[in-house]
Length: 101
Picture 1 (cartoon, rainbow, N blue to C red):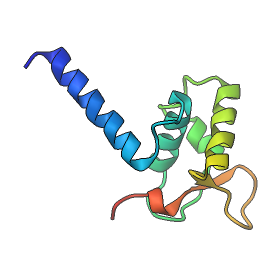
Picture 2 (spheres, rainbow, N blue to C red):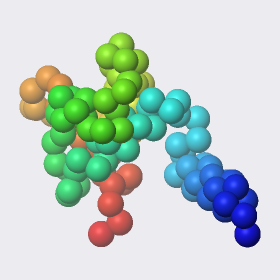
Picture 3 (cartoon, helix red, strand yellow):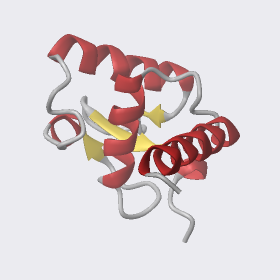
């Protein structure tokens, strides 16, 4: 199998998996912000700060305005939540979308 075929098959599998979990309609920036937030949480309910997400390598190249739009969109869509009683700029990845363990 040539390298391009392998890459294209992986991309097809990734797109199918994103469809299966409801990520297919997210923009690339939203996917990167969400993935960064998810990577920064080790346990369900763990808070992650916007500054932590912003400094993650996946989102460092995203313009500031685009980053904030993506955060707002992820909140509106329910992928991220603002925990009750937490300070501003603190988020929780929706627990049913977190790690499989």
